[in-house]
Amino acid sequence: MNKAKKILMNARVIILAISLVMAVFAISPNPWSDGVAIRNIEKNSSAALAGITSPSPQSTLMSKERITMINNQPVHDLAGYAEIVKDIKPNKSVTIKTTKGLYVLHTAQTADFGMSVYEAPKTNIRKGLDLQGGTRVLLQPEEKLTQNDMSTLIDSMRQRLNIFGLSDVVIKESSDLSRNRYILVEVAGVNEEEVKELLAKQGKFEAKIGNETVFKGGKDITYVCRSAECSGLDPEIGCRQLETSWMCRFRFSITLSQEAAERQANATKKLAVVKEQAEEFLNKPLDLYLDDQLTDSLNIGADLKGRAVTDIQISGAGTGTTQPDAIEDYKNSMRKLQTILITGSLPVKLSIIQTDTVSPILGEQFTKNAFLLAGIAITIVMLALVAVYRNLKIAVPIMMTVMFEIIILLGVSALVKRDIDLAAVAGIIAVVGTGVDQQIIITDEVIRGETRRAYTWKEKMHNAFFIIMGAYLVLVVAMLPLIWAGAGLLKGFAFMAIIGATIGVFITRPAYAKIIEIMMRD
Image (cartoon, rainbow, N blue to C red; front, side):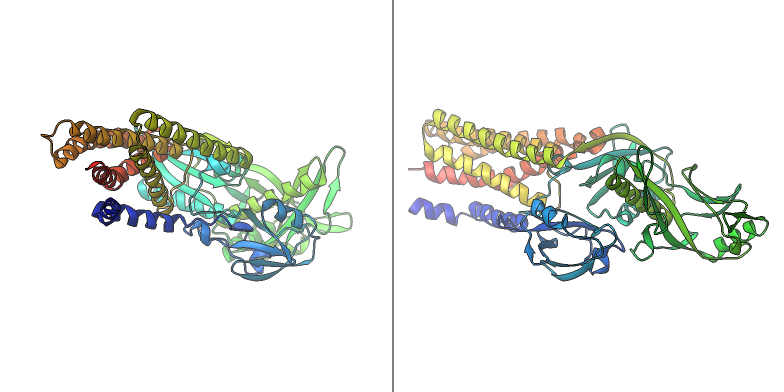
């Protein structure tokens, strides 16, 4: 009892306990968290119009809004959510209860809420794409940029992805040891093609009459409609079955700036009027170009000749082998076109250096395997320690210290919102290995010192920590280059190794040394 009191009252142990409490608070574990969490909300969608907002990228996972009930039916998980949603018909009112309120949604023609969801998180620990599924794209500007230009480019990319409806996005600058500059984009829950279409292309939109450009995406567009009232399936054409596929025509309205409207008026006043099937049009269409590729040609009504009209309709089409595929394609094509019209083109072209896509199912399997292997490794280490020392008073404190170290490390990761990916998991394993090794050094110094009475306890600890501090400094120096190596893709490993070793050297291992000193004394 006296030894236990000494341990609990020791300053090093108290610091360890405080660190543990703070780490658990940062992680905020809640295994009973129910429902599905909202990942993002599309602008002007049914969900947005009902008052549901996209979560802030800076918000903690456990603070994100969760859907717990739809039409008085409880939602427990993602499968349950999908089961309820599939039975909801278009043009209906839907009641959704979340952790932040009650909302009434009015579904559009396709019964789409305009939001994406995922399994409710149980902790604030952020899983990287390797463990949760998603897409990672490494891009490189095709020309050298100043720091201000790079910041502008990243802001433009972030705006484009956010307007497209993706809020759970990480965009950051990275570089390698050769000083090549890259942009790393990570998007959870989105397939590779969507990200590549949005970011790999500059997104230059032009509307031309003949060879004359009348307006461009961005500054020439003052408003783009994205609500169900003025965007969606073209009511006059809708979806049609072709010989071997389906085609769905979409349309949405935009508002031009006065300058763009004047350019269009000047371009149309020279055109002749022609008649097609009892309708009168101008003899040249409005051609829509995306990245210099013609995407659509729209007939211009004769009544628009020479008029500076600011409100016009933009249209396009989506195709697919089945009607649902064509509907999904038209929705993606329309959202991309709307996004580019709002944001304009990116300042420079980007080249895709590397893409990685992990399915959510594979990510879940990675997570399970990581926990399984961690459990096996800890069990093997525990058995080895018992076999070597034949004393649970040594083996148990070592393993408890390792667990405390992992908890504090995860708490720091949650606090700084650092993703845990496979590289980070490797870093945690490295921390565990060095932690056990250094605690064995401390233990051996204590046991060896018992047979060499000339050494005081202070001298024993000094000898042990001289070795530990030397190993710590070597590890930090070795890890620092990995922050930049591989365009920053190994940063998770370096971060975990450095932070974990720092926690060990300054918090957990000093506490372990004091615990083992008190327990081994007569």
